[in-house]
Length: 316
Image (cartoon, rainbow, N blue to C red; front, top):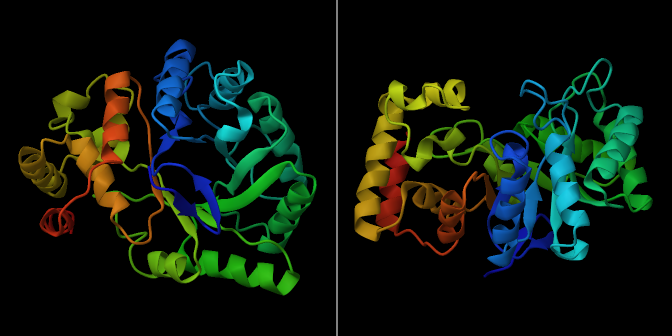
Protein backbone atom coordinates (compact mmCIF):
# COMPACT_ATOMS: atom_id res chain seq x y z
CA UNK A 1 0.00 0.00 0.00
CA UNK A 2 1.11 3.57 -0.55
CA UNK A 3 2.76 5.59 2.19
CA UNK A 4 0.67 8.68 2.89
CA UNK A 5 2.07 11.82 4.40
CA UNK A 6 0.62 12.89 7.75
CA UNK A 7 1.60 16.51 8.04
CA UNK A 8 5.36 16.70 7.84
CA UNK A 9 5.72 13.12 9.03
CA UNK A 10 5.37 9.77 7.27
CA UNK A 11 3.42 7.87 9.90
CA UNK A 12 0.88 5.97 7.85
CA UNK A 13 1.53 2.74 5.95
CA UNK A 14 -1.98 2.78 4.52
CA UNK A 15 -4.62 5.44 3.96
CA UNK A 16 -7.27 4.42 6.49
CA UNK A 17 -7.27 5.12 10.24
CA UNK A 18 -9.30 2.82 12.50
CA UNK A 19 -11.73 4.75 14.69
CA UNK A 20 -11.49 3.45 18.24
CA UNK A 21 -14.60 5.26 19.45
CA UNK A 22 -16.48 1.95 19.17
CA UNK A 23 -14.20 0.11 21.62
CA UNK A 24 -16.04 -0.38 24.89
CA UNK A 25 -19.25 0.86 23.29
CA UNK A 26 -20.60 -1.03 20.28
CA UNK A 27 -17.59 -3.38 20.21
CA UNK A 28 -16.76 -5.30 23.38
CA UNK A 29 -13.19 -6.15 24.36
CA UNK A 30 -13.03 -9.50 22.54
CA UNK A 31 -14.51 -8.04 19.35
CA UNK A 32 -12.16 -5.04 19.57
CA UNK A 33 -9.13 -7.34 19.72
CA UNK A 34 -10.32 -9.30 16.68
CA UNK A 35 -10.89 -6.09 14.71
CA UNK A 36 -7.48 -4.68 15.60
CA UNK A 37 -5.78 -7.96 14.72
CA UNK A 38 -7.45 -8.06 11.31
CA UNK A 39 -6.79 -4.37 10.64
CA UNK A 40 -3.06 -4.70 11.28
CA UNK A 41 -2.86 -8.04 9.46
CA UNK A 42 -4.22 -6.23 6.39
CA UNK A 43 -1.25 -3.83 6.45
CA UNK A 44 -2.78 -0.84 8.23
CA UNK A 45 -1.12 0.69 11.26
CA UNK A 46 -3.04 3.62 12.79
CA UNK A 47 -5.66 3.75 15.55
CA UNK A 48 -7.53 6.88 16.59
CA UNK A 49 -9.04 7.25 20.06
CA UNK A 50 -9.57 9.90 22.78
CA UNK A 51 -9.54 10.02 26.55
CA UNK A 52 -13.29 10.69 26.59
CA UNK A 53 -14.24 7.58 24.55
CA UNK A 54 -16.79 6.32 25.50
CA UNK A 55 -17.92 8.33 28.51
CA UNK A 56 -21.37 8.85 26.96
CA UNK A 57 -22.28 5.18 27.46
CA UNK A 58 -24.11 4.41 30.72
CA UNK A 59 -21.68 2.69 33.07
CA UNK A 60 -18.57 3.94 31.25
CA UNK A 61 -16.23 6.44 32.86
CA UNK A 62 -14.22 7.57 29.87
CA UNK A 63 -10.87 6.09 28.91
CA UNK A 64 -12.61 2.82 28.06
CA UNK A 65 -11.32 2.79 24.48
CA UNK A 66 -7.77 3.67 25.55
CA UNK A 67 -7.83 0.85 28.11
CA UNK A 68 -8.84 -1.72 25.50
CA UNK A 69 -6.15 -0.53 23.09
CA UNK A 70 -3.61 -0.61 25.93
CA UNK A 71 -4.46 -4.20 26.84
CA UNK A 72 -4.23 -5.19 23.18
CA UNK A 73 -0.82 -3.53 22.82
CA UNK A 74 0.41 -5.12 26.04
CA UNK A 75 -0.35 -8.57 24.68
CA UNK A 76 2.25 -7.97 21.99
CA UNK A 77 -0.13 -8.65 19.12
CA UNK A 78 1.88 -6.05 17.21
CA UNK A 79 5.21 -4.44 18.05
CA UNK A 80 4.68 -1.05 19.70
CA UNK A 81 6.83 0.72 17.12
CA UNK A 82 4.63 -0.69 14.36
CA UNK A 83 1.42 0.80 15.79
CA UNK A 84 0.58 4.49 15.42
CA UNK A 85 -1.64 5.56 18.31
CA UNK A 86 -3.59 8.81 18.15
CA UNK A 87 -5.44 10.11 21.19
CA UNK A 88 -6.86 13.43 22.33
CA UNK A 89 -7.21 15.73 25.31
CA UNK A 90 -9.68 18.47 26.17
CA UNK A 91 -13.14 16.90 26.34
CA UNK A 92 -14.77 16.85 29.74
CA UNK A 93 -13.65 13.88 31.86
CA UNK A 94 -15.17 15.09 35.13
CA UNK A 95 -15.32 18.17 37.37
CA UNK A 96 -12.40 20.49 36.53
CA UNK A 97 -11.05 17.92 34.07
CA UNK A 98 -11.38 19.45 30.62
CA UNK A 99 -9.91 22.09 28.34
CA UNK A 100 -6.40 22.90 27.16
CA UNK A 101 -4.73 24.58 30.14
CA UNK A 102 -1.09 23.51 30.36
CA UNK A 103 -1.44 21.95 33.81
CA UNK A 104 -4.42 19.89 32.69
CA UNK A 105 -2.69 18.66 29.52
CA UNK A 106 0.31 17.54 31.59
CA UNK A 107 -2.02 15.66 33.95
CA UNK A 108 -4.26 14.18 31.25
CA UNK A 109 -1.39 12.79 29.20
CA UNK A 110 -0.21 10.74 32.18
CA UNK A 111 -3.70 9.25 32.52
CA UNK A 112 -3.79 8.38 28.82
CA UNK A 113 -0.31 6.84 28.91
CA UNK A 114 -1.33 4.69 31.85
CA UNK A 115 -4.51 3.48 30.16
CA UNK A 116 -2.66 2.83 26.89
CA UNK A 117 0.13 1.03 28.79
CA UNK A 118 2.79 2.77 26.72
CA UNK A 119 5.63 5.24 27.24
CA UNK A 120 4.64 7.54 24.40
CA UNK A 121 1.76 8.68 22.21
CA UNK A 122 2.49 8.97 18.51
CA UNK A 123 0.05 11.81 17.84
CA UNK A 124 -1.64 13.85 20.58
CA UNK A 125 -4.52 16.13 19.62
CA UNK A 126 -6.32 19.06 21.18
CA UNK A 127 -9.86 17.69 20.93
CA UNK A 128 -11.80 20.98 20.88
CA UNK A 129 -10.95 24.69 20.78
CA UNK A 130 -10.62 26.19 24.26
CA UNK A 131 -11.45 29.92 24.09
CA UNK A 132 -10.30 30.38 27.70
CA UNK A 133 -6.73 29.25 27.00
CA UNK A 134 -4.20 31.01 24.73
CA UNK A 135 -2.66 28.81 22.04
CA UNK A 136 0.79 29.57 23.45
CA UNK A 137 -0.10 27.96 26.77
CA UNK A 138 -1.32 24.72 25.20
CA UNK A 139 1.56 24.56 22.73
CA UNK A 140 4.08 25.10 25.52
CA UNK A 141 2.69 22.03 27.30
CA UNK A 142 2.97 19.97 24.13
CA UNK A 143 6.53 21.23 23.62
CA UNK A 144 7.43 20.00 27.09
CA UNK A 145 5.85 16.61 26.40
CA UNK A 146 7.78 16.32 23.13
CA UNK A 147 11.03 17.11 24.93
CA UNK A 148 10.21 14.42 27.49
CA UNK A 149 9.47 11.90 24.74
CA UNK A 150 5.90 11.37 25.93
CA UNK A 151 4.40 12.50 22.63
CA UNK A 152 5.94 12.35 19.18
CA UNK A 153 3.69 14.71 17.22
CA UNK A 154 0.85 17.13 17.98
CA UNK A 155 -2.33 18.12 16.24
CA UNK A 156 -5.80 19.51 16.76
CA UNK A 157 -9.42 18.70 16.06
CA UNK A 158 -12.45 20.86 15.28
CA UNK A 159 -10.60 24.13 14.66
CA UNK A 160 -11.85 26.44 11.91
CA UNK A 161 -9.53 28.26 9.50
CA UNK A 162 -9.24 31.38 11.67
CA UNK A 163 -8.44 29.36 14.80
CA UNK A 164 -5.91 27.16 12.99
CA UNK A 165 -4.14 30.18 11.52
CA UNK A 166 -4.07 31.82 14.95
CA UNK A 167 -2.41 28.70 16.37
CA UNK A 168 0.27 28.85 13.64
CA UNK A 169 0.90 32.52 14.36
CA UNK A 170 1.17 31.85 18.09
CA UNK A 171 3.63 29.01 17.52
CA UNK A 172 5.82 31.14 15.27
CA UNK A 173 5.84 34.13 17.61
CA UNK A 174 6.65 32.02 20.69
CA UNK A 175 9.08 29.65 18.98
CA UNK A 176 6.92 26.64 19.80
CA UNK A 177 6.03 23.53 17.79
CA UNK A 178 2.88 23.97 15.75
CA UNK A 179 0.00 21.64 15.04
CA UNK A 180 0.92 19.41 12.12
CA UNK A 181 -2.35 17.48 11.86
CA UNK A 182 -5.99 18.52 11.78
CA UNK A 183 -8.94 16.23 12.47
CA UNK A 184 -12.11 17.81 11.06
CA UNK A 185 -15.61 16.46 10.56
CA UNK A 186 -15.86 15.78 6.84
CA UNK A 187 -17.84 13.39 4.69
CA UNK A 188 -20.07 13.34 1.61
CA UNK A 189 -22.90 14.99 3.55
CA UNK A 190 -21.02 17.30 5.98
CA UNK A 191 -18.79 19.40 3.74
CA UNK A 192 -19.31 23.09 4.45
CA UNK A 193 -17.15 23.39 7.57
CA UNK A 194 -14.04 21.93 5.90
CA UNK A 195 -14.23 22.76 2.20
CA UNK A 196 -13.02 26.24 1.31
CA UNK A 197 -10.75 28.29 3.60
CA UNK A 198 -9.93 25.47 6.04
CA UNK A 199 -9.04 22.91 3.37
CA UNK A 200 -7.06 25.56 1.47
CA UNK A 201 -5.09 26.43 4.60
CA UNK A 202 -4.26 22.78 5.26
CA UNK A 203 -2.92 22.38 1.73
CA UNK A 204 -0.99 25.66 1.89
CA UNK A 205 0.61 24.84 5.25
CA UNK A 206 1.21 21.14 4.52
CA UNK A 207 -1.04 19.93 7.33
CA UNK A 208 -2.07 16.29 7.55
CA UNK A 209 -5.85 15.86 7.56
CA UNK A 210 -7.58 12.84 9.08
CA UNK A 211 -11.35 13.14 8.82
CA UNK A 212 -13.82 11.95 11.43
CA UNK A 213 -17.45 10.94 10.90
CA UNK A 214 -16.12 9.88 7.50
CA UNK A 215 -19.15 7.62 7.04
CA UNK A 216 -21.59 10.06 8.68
CA UNK A 217 -22.16 7.85 11.75
CA UNK A 218 -22.72 4.86 9.45
CA UNK A 219 -25.31 6.55 7.23
CA UNK A 220 -23.07 6.36 4.16
CA UNK A 221 -22.88 2.57 4.48
CA UNK A 222 -26.41 2.58 3.08
CA UNK A 223 -27.93 0.56 5.90
CA UNK A 224 -30.04 3.47 7.20
CA UNK A 225 -32.59 4.55 4.59
CA UNK A 226 -35.69 5.21 6.70
CA UNK A 227 -36.35 6.28 10.27
CA UNK A 228 -37.39 2.70 11.02
CA UNK A 229 -33.89 1.50 10.09
CA UNK A 230 -32.39 3.59 12.89
CA UNK A 231 -34.77 2.67 15.70
CA UNK A 232 -33.10 0.92 18.61
CA UNK A 233 -29.62 1.42 17.13
CA UNK A 234 -26.77 2.89 19.17
CA UNK A 235 -26.39 5.69 16.61
CA UNK A 236 -30.12 6.39 16.22
CA UNK A 237 -29.94 10.06 17.22
CA UNK A 238 -26.77 10.73 15.23
CA UNK A 239 -28.09 9.24 11.98
CA UNK A 240 -31.52 10.88 12.03
CA UNK A 241 -30.28 14.21 10.65
CA UNK A 242 -29.06 12.58 7.44
CA UNK A 243 -32.47 11.20 6.48
CA UNK A 244 -33.49 14.16 4.32
CA UNK A 245 -33.58 14.92 0.58
CA UNK A 246 -29.85 15.62 0.47
CA UNK A 247 -29.02 12.40 2.27
CA UNK A 248 -31.23 10.33 -0.01
CA UNK A 249 -29.66 11.92 -3.11
CA UNK A 250 -26.24 10.92 -1.82
CA UNK A 251 -27.40 7.34 -1.22
CA UNK A 252 -28.82 7.21 -4.73
CA UNK A 253 -25.47 8.36 -6.16
CA UNK A 254 -23.64 5.76 -4.07
CA UNK A 255 -26.04 3.08 -5.32
CA UNK A 256 -25.39 4.08 -8.94
CA UNK A 257 -21.63 3.86 -8.53
CA UNK A 258 -21.97 0.61 -6.59
CA UNK A 259 -23.71 -0.95 -9.59
CA UNK A 260 -20.96 0.25 -11.92
CA UNK A 261 -18.03 -0.80 -9.74
CA UNK A 262 -19.29 -3.66 -7.59
CA UNK A 263 -18.08 -1.75 -4.53
CA UNK A 264 -20.16 -1.18 -1.41
CA UNK A 265 -21.49 2.29 -0.54
CA UNK A 266 -19.13 2.59 2.45
CA UNK A 267 -16.13 1.75 0.28
CA UNK A 268 -17.16 4.39 -2.26
CA UNK A 269 -17.75 7.06 0.42
CA UNK A 270 -14.25 6.51 1.81
CA UNK A 271 -12.68 6.37 -1.65
CA UNK A 272 -14.31 9.75 -2.37
CA UNK A 273 -12.48 11.21 0.62
CA UNK A 274 -9.21 9.66 -0.49
CA UNK A 275 -9.40 11.53 -3.81
CA UNK A 276 -9.77 14.89 -2.06
CA UNK A 277 -6.52 16.85 -2.31
CA UNK A 278 -6.51 18.07 1.29
CA UNK A 279 -7.29 14.70 2.89
CA UNK A 280 -4.55 12.39 4.15
CA UNK A 281 -6.75 9.61 5.49
CA UNK A 282 -10.31 9.11 6.67
CA UNK A 283 -11.02 7.68 10.10
CA UNK A 284 -13.64 4.95 9.98
CA UNK A 285 -14.98 2.51 12.56
CA UNK A 286 -16.13 -1.08 12.28
CA UNK A 287 -17.86 -3.36 14.75
CA UNK A 288 -17.63 -6.57 12.71
CA UNK A 289 -15.12 -8.18 10.37
CA UNK A 290 -17.52 -7.73 7.44
CA UNK A 291 -17.62 -3.97 8.11
CA UNK A 292 -13.84 -3.95 8.40
CA UNK A 293 -13.59 -5.47 4.92
CA UNK A 294 -15.25 -2.34 3.54
CA UNK A 295 -12.57 -0.16 5.14
CA UNK A 296 -9.80 -2.30 3.73
CA UNK A 297 -11.34 -2.46 0.25
CA UNK A 298 -11.81 1.31 0.09
CA UNK A 299 -8.03 1.77 0.12
CA UNK A 300 -7.85 -0.23 -3.13
CA UNK A 301 -10.69 1.60 -4.88
CA UNK A 302 -9.97 4.51 -7.22
CA UNK A 303 -13.03 6.44 -8.34
CA UNK A 304 -13.32 7.88 -11.83
CA UNK A 305 -13.71 11.59 -12.46
CA UNK A 306 -17.30 10.90 -13.48
CA UNK A 307 -18.03 9.14 -10.20
CA UNK A 308 -16.44 11.96 -8.22
CA UNK A 309 -18.54 14.53 -10.08
CA UNK A 310 -21.74 12.58 -9.44
CA UNK A 311 -20.98 12.37 -5.72
CA UNK A 312 -19.92 16.01 -5.48
CA UNK A 313 -23.18 17.17 -7.05
CA UNK A 314 -25.33 14.88 -4.91
CA UNK A 315 -23.89 16.37 -1.74
CA UNK A 316 -24.17 20.03 -2.71
